[in-house]
Image 1 (tube, one colour):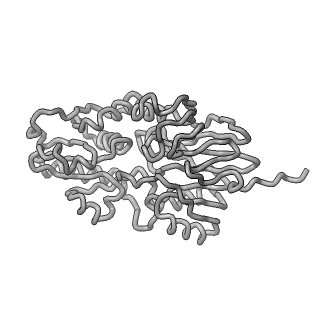
Image 2 (image 1 turned 90 degrees about the vertical axis):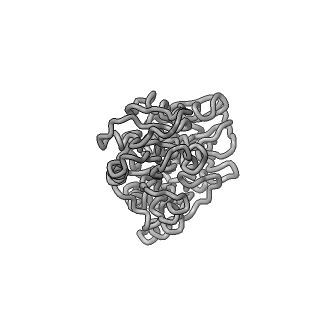
Length: 340
């Protein structure tokens, strides 16, 4: 029998005002407006929005959405483990690990002989707080491009954490305030500190406590944590205190005498960003793939076609085309930069 023709993805996958829409299964991926059925890749607010009728996602992301949005996050959840298959209309869907944060997933869609993988946000390096990215061979790969410039080559995580510990040893009379995004980055920095042998209590701004508790409830070991209360902030010399990046420059941080201000972000590679935030100790730690990870992934998934979203699209599109991959930029609204 003659082999059936594959269905071109653009015939059933397209960008709409609500977000990326799969017509074959009548669902949206990370829509930024309420819809009847949404598949959510992870819990960051630029991907997970409240108000959907039905949501397919991982148990970890469902827990994050409930924590952040309460009962209004969705009317119903279908919590799928990695690898479990769901059928919507003429399409089948499964979730694969993305390595971004707890519960993060790629969306693997199959329809009429064609497989499309939507990466969501991802990184390739090891992370004790979430499952490692799994390359899935496909016909079309829809990839993020947050750090898709050759200048963005993230150093080893352990080296950056050692910079923090070395500074702590050199400055035992100063508190170290570390700016971290509340979901994913805070927990990853804590896990890296524990892996490096730091076993003292780590102090938290109150805005970080709930999500750290959620990670612990999901089985991620973070060690002893203490919330910074309203007491005097003069007794934290030699300690590590994690806080949202915005708190490095607000009233909350002013009570700490002579702090070392640090910030953990992939954007700390850009010296001007560190200077703009008055960061004394920039730590290049990202939950997104860097240039080498992005380009390696294009080869690992073996997709003849690539759509590139939210980031430095032009450079990655050029790289893909120069390696014989058909590539184009895909404009999705509502996406924000890491730690914005």
